[in-house]
Length: 632
Image (cartoon, rainbow, N blue to C red; front, top):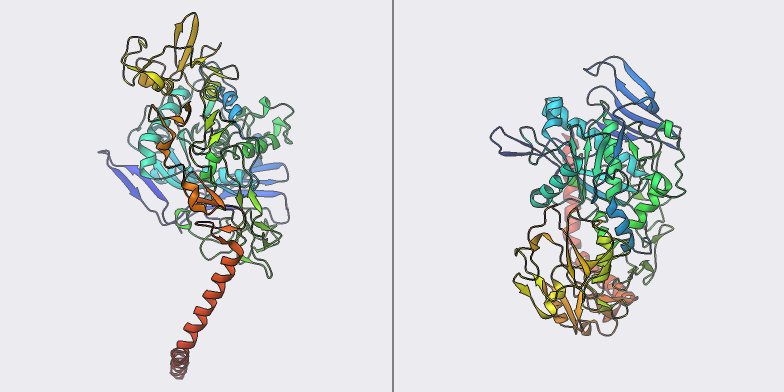
């Protein structure tokens, strides 16, 4: 099974520091996935790059296969994964206090912001991944080709693990720091993660668009920690993790990376979820999100991990995972049986052994006879749902429901209410699908007890870049003070989502501000601001650090163009009521579909009639040529 593709790139550096980007021959691959023949509940992820290596699972028992010799030839060993040992490791997560080595502190705050409803359609999600390898890892294997193959094997295993959750991990880029590191890689995993996140935001995202980045390091992290990642971070600027390659077998690093990516996808440690049950005993490997990783190869995700993930994916900010990677971005290009619907395919349910889709022919990747569709939120029992059926329910005040068009199986793009629309019973205004407020942001930063300090703090707020003598600095005055530094009331001395803070006492009341990222808070530029879109007065919102009229988003009369059958969304486009068609909701969808089909058919018949003589001549010519060919 092919893992990568035509636009997949591999990056390394010359001795002088010049970046070298290559597009390898994607047909020359040695990574495969599949099942054990005759066993429905089985899986396999195998590399043939240097002998046979990888794993296969039958029911809940996993086995590892690897060559006994360094050259990969000759005898191989097959043993139970429970006997695979490496550095006994734990996952450590960043927080205000570094002694916390269990659940990320940010998780407790972010849980308050989760959407109440899970996504209606639990169709496949696609993580477009860029993998980065540090210099210590490169020097461990000494050869660029060897390192690249090991990384592909790691991702191959990770992808196979996530397939059971209907998530595919597609490697679209691999970068190796073969001469020197681009960041400071520290034995302190918190420092390494912070540095990697900063480099990803300033450098990597500019090179190539992607959903998630993971750093594989050869350094030995302090203590038992082997990995670190931000929780609930997929599709954000913090969508990344760092993993130590702590085992001779690639499966060890793969289990760690799958674990850290799980945190990005909203998963908690199994031990921290009440009544969470893993069907596999700890001694036999347990589940991927066990707090101890890298000891024994885990075989699957627990049901609570799956529940955590789908709850997080209900957040509209995770929509980056809905777009299917382009076929030419995947190693090997289009291939039937890889569970990606690519050019020339109507469906792809995997290999014939693993396909259970009654609508799809796994051998040809074509729809079965009588089927109209095989996937999509608007596909049910192999038929396209009728126009108007809800395919994505509204999640909150600022979200809009999506309805099937009746013309295809896919649910329309997720859309939100127009920016500036009132929300939360008039307590705020919608902004890009959320209803931001001072109070909610304080709870996110400081925990459930966090409250807005608006009205308690100074009547002036420091401008960006000014020293933190808030009462003596150059100031924002009037309503603008509500859009400057976010001041909160909290008994906690450290914020959940930041490692630094600043306090100021006014009339015996202590207001707190959270740092953006650094421990040292020297200027107001280091402090978190009131979020864009927060209400700062009647018909007023925070925008560009100032309290401005809600008309800064544009005219409030946008919905007038929707002819009374829809409203404007956050893109200022008409979001039509069920049964009405875009772009202006002036025609019923059924009428438009029929009219369009009739017009197209009439035009096609006319063209065929006019071209009949030419087509006939063409057929005769082809047949004549064929006869002459066979006579030779």
